[in-house]
Amino acid sequence: MAAQCQSCAMPMKKDPEGGGSERDGSKSSKYCSHCYKGGAFTQPTMTAKEMQAFVKAKLKQMGYPGFLAGFFSAGIPKLERWSKG
View 1: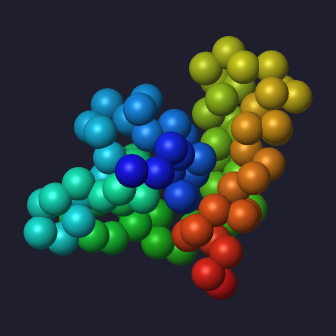
View 2 (view 1 turned 90 degrees about the vertical axis):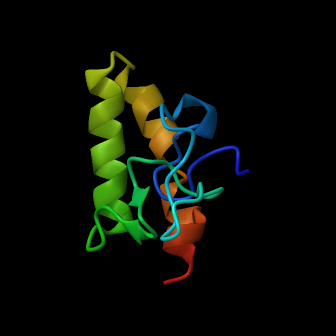
């Protein structure tokens, strides 16, 4: 299993559902349950930049300082979902 979601960079061990789901109901080893359900992305039209902004805002909401939120979301465009483009 990937150490982090290949869409939003969330550590997979933090996913309450233990990963997203494939079409057949099996667990996804690449994507978290927030990004991927039933074999499809939950936000299919979202861009890497939009995901970065979303994750950064979410981290700040959770109490992370802005510089850390920026640091944690900086690598999102390099993740598998976005680098295929």
